[in-house]
Amino acid sequence: MNDEPPTLRILSGPLLPAVAKFGAPLAFGMGLQVTFNLVDAYLISRLSHEVAGSALGALGICDQLAAIGSIISYGLSTATAAVMSRRAGRGDIIGARRVAWQSSLMVLALGAIFGLLGIFGSHFLIFDVVRARGRVAELGVEYLQVILTGNVTIFALLHLTTMQRAMGSSKTPASLLVAANVFNLLFAVLLVYGQGPAPALFAWGPELSAHLGIPRLGLVGAAWATVLARSLVLIPLVILVVRRFGLFRREVRGPFDGPLLRRLFSLGWPTSTQLVVRIVSMLMVQSLVARAYTTNTDQAATTALGVVFRLETMALFISLGWGSAAHTFVAQHLGAGKRERAHRSGWLAAAMNAIMMVALVAVYLGYDREIVQFFDRDPQVVVLALDYIRIVGISYVGLGLGIVLGSAMQGAGATKTTLLIDVVVLFGVLLPLAFGVVLSHGRLEQLWKVVAVGYASSAIVYVFTYQRRRYLDVEVS
Image 1 (cartoon, rainbow, N blue to C red):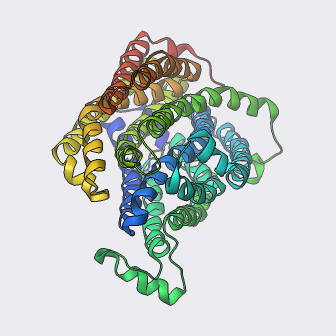
Image 2 (image 1 turned 45 degrees about the vertical axis):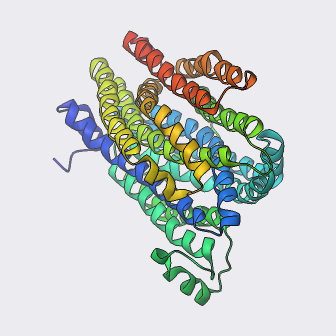
């Protein structure tokens, strides 16, 4: 059984165990990636009191901004996976490899564009777009310049692992994502603390940093650690996709293929735009909070959002893991002409993710105070963060349901439909209600309720749309 081609294991046999075995490593790997990001936040929170609060607030803002580039790239990667999975499902392996090469050229070009944005546009994004203030803004610019300039590393990492998943492999991509974050933790300890004081758990860091001559970089050190860790993992990853799946071999290399790239762009831009819409909605919430509920001397609300958005990212990434499984199963089954199995696989992935979301929410609600105080003990920050978790937490089930079913539809090529859904929820529900709260001088708790309503609305619309099955009829070459 272990010698079966990955596509055969997906297309035959009991569907529930197949989805579980494929999706669980992806969800686990994505969840661990966020766990290490939470460790980054912990490292930052243990800097001096004068720096830690502002650094956490800057980190929360920069994560959202940096995620836009990753999401645009990921949209192209999911389009690539949809086409590759369809071709692999019908046995056209050479065609799948050609798609891999052409799409990788586009990803590298996109990385160059965001590198320039990091160098020349970070100040504008932090000060003029988000309107961050004080020390939060100053630290944010330093961090964003590094993380955006090195964004090509996460573009390439996500693209290569997504292509592996499209060819039917989920355990290897998950393990490589975990490895990247192990390196990130090691480098972050060395670069964030340098030769200065560090928590007892990481007491080995300053001694090693002194031996290597590494200075104390603080928040910007976390950015450099992330870029270096991703770069290190890319080397074995490229070797693996060439040797195991035959990607990037000489016979499939060539100059830009205009028609194919236009097709990938046509499939990918709605997904990219859709995911950017999700991030923009959170940035809008962050911006509204920064403008209406903070001052130059009181940035507790921004810091609280920096903490809870990190926790919320866990729900998002676990859901993206199960969504990746749904994407692959739907695409490969449609490529093989198995429409009913394609449809059922999306529901199964969504159900498994819902179980994980319930468990995650139970942990958050059961240990909310301890979790928040792990990152920041400021009483005002803790109160604001606890209110957010208790109000928004249960809606993570809806958030995950929308993400997984949306990914399943994207696997079928219905990317414009999923984009339309998210745009309607953002501009028809979330933003009007959020602006209403701010303009009426409402309390922050009311704004948190708006976020929860947005997640629930998204789930309702996706369930209704997915059940109608029209996404099954979309043509993908």
